[in-house]
Amino acid sequence: MPIFRRFAQAMGAAALIHAGAAAAAEPALAPHRAVYELTMSKATGANAPSEARGRIAFDFTGNACEGYVQNFRQLTELQPSEGAARVSDMRSATFESGDGRDFRFTIETRVAGAQPDDIDGKAHKTKDDALTIDLTKPKRAKLDVAGPVLFPTEHIKRVLAAARAGETIFEAKIYDGSGDGQKIFDTLTVIGRPAKNEPTEKAAQLDALKKLQRWPVTISYFEPGKKDQQPIYTLSFDLYDNGVSRALKLDYGEFVLSGEMTELTLLPTRPCDKP
Image (cartoon, rainbow, N blue to C red; front, top):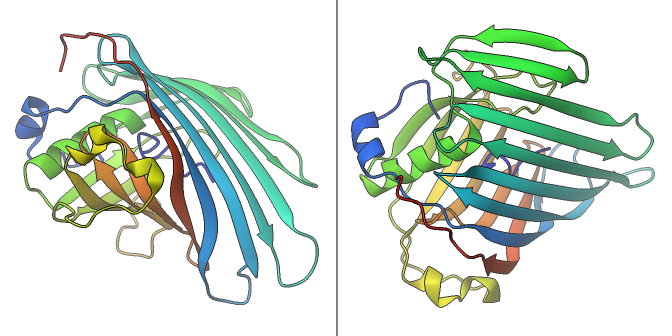
C-alpha cells in the first residue's frame, strides 16, 4: 500500500479547521531523504501473516516556489501461515505545485505472481476548489470531483499548522492518485500534545531535529461518506515541525507494521519568499 505518500505522502480538507490561522502559520517543509525498516508488531485474525518485514525509502525535495517532488518506494514481504511469502514492491513519483492546485503522479506496483499495477495521471483544482482528474493509466479516464480536496503535501502543511495552533482534530478529503486513480479518501487526523520523550533512533539524533517540536499524529482513512464505520487503515507517526516523520505505525486491521527510521539526511533548502 502507498502508505508513506499519505504523509507528505503522506503524509485533510473537507472541513478546514481554523483555515485562516493555518494559512498564517503555514510551516516550511524540509527537503530530506529517510529510510524506515518495517517489522510486524501485531497480528490478529485468520488471514493475518505469520511474519512480515520490509523497508520504506522516501525522498522529498522542493519548496513553495518551485513545487514539491516526492519519490517513494515500499518493499514488503508477508509470510502467510501456509504457502510461500508474498513480496510487493510499490514505487511512486509525484509533483505537487507550491500553491497546492496541481498534482502529477506515477505509481507502479509489482506483486509476485500478479499482473503489474500501474497508475499515471494528473489532477487540477479549479477556482471553486473542485477537482479535475485526468488519467492515462490503468485506462484513460477523466472525472470531476466536488471540493474541497487536498493533495498530500498540502495536507501535511495543514496538519502541521493545526498542531502549531494547538488543534487536536483535523478532518479532510485527500487525493493522492492511489487505488485506481479515482479514489478520494475521507480522513480524520488526531493530533496529540507535543512529545517530550527523547527519540531512541540514532537517525533522529540530528541537532536540527532536537530543536524542533514534534507531535504524535494518527490519520485514519475512510471510504467516502463512511467515517462512522471502521477505517480502511490507520497511520500513526511522530511529526516534526519541518515535516520529517519517525516512529511509524501502519495499521491494516488484521496486522500492524512498525517502521523505525534508520537513515535520515536533511538536504539543502533553496531560498523561497513564499510561506
